[in-house]
Image (spheres, rainbow, N blue to C red):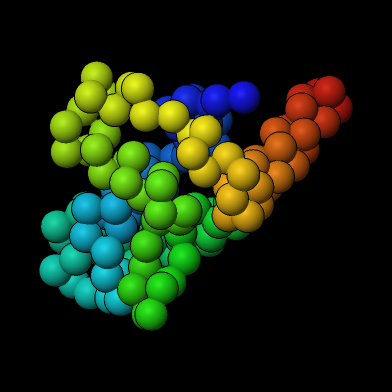
Length: 126
């Protein structure tokens, strides 16, 4: 089954800071997330980077490759870059099907399902 990446990513319910960090890493992969110029360029602060990075890492949406922070899996990285550079209209036809069987995609999907399950359980308790 094909899943639209936009829908897939939207369901992670990322905060504005998490989205900014994801956008920053997509546009400008770096080994130095806490460098002053990097934080200024991407409207990030030291404390917020730490919290956002933990959340993105918990979903395996980012990791370090050879010391450089990258969006993962690479197919998501390419799709998100298209969205940021060309807009959602051009990216709307890109599908998740090409990576849906990869181990990285399976890990992200399982973490998302666990998150969604926990969220639903919390709502039932209310």
